[in-house]
Amino acid sequence: MGRKAVPEPESDFCLVAPPTPYDPALGLALHAARAVPKDARCPVCGMYPSRSPAWAAQVIFSNGDAQFFDSPLSLFMYLSDVARYSPGRSAGEIVARYVTDFGSRQMLDAASAFYVVGSSAQGPMRAGNLPAFASEQAARAFAEQRGGAVRAFAEIDAALVQRLGGRAAHRH
Figure (cartoon, rainbow, N blue to C red):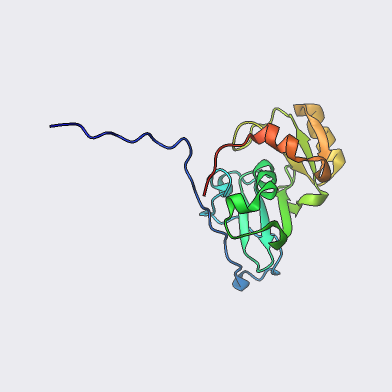
């Protein structure tokens, strides 16, 4: 009897992480940050953001749907190519972006946060992390202890995101 040829495994796997629909029963405003559900998956890497609450991030779409991320870096990767990670969605539908303050563990507007690039902090993906802080002073204090450089939201550009996160194949 002949052996069947075994196909080569794909070099990448595809995970489509659906957004979490808005639930008015939570009592939150339509575009407010919300707690990360236990079953939410990061659309960039497939991890469970609820397992790394100090690093979690999220976007809220105009209809109230939320997409959750295991880290600010995954959020930035997502924002750089929304359609790649959420087919049928566009960046224009995003009305709010949130990251977790590394110190207080509270969600804050991603655009007002300060990020530390190149620290020794080990986040969910172990490398390329961007711990977020509500104040520049807190970010600088962290950088003094753990290394790295402080950057504002607008200073996190595509080149930095690519350097930190790489561009793994992700085809739909």
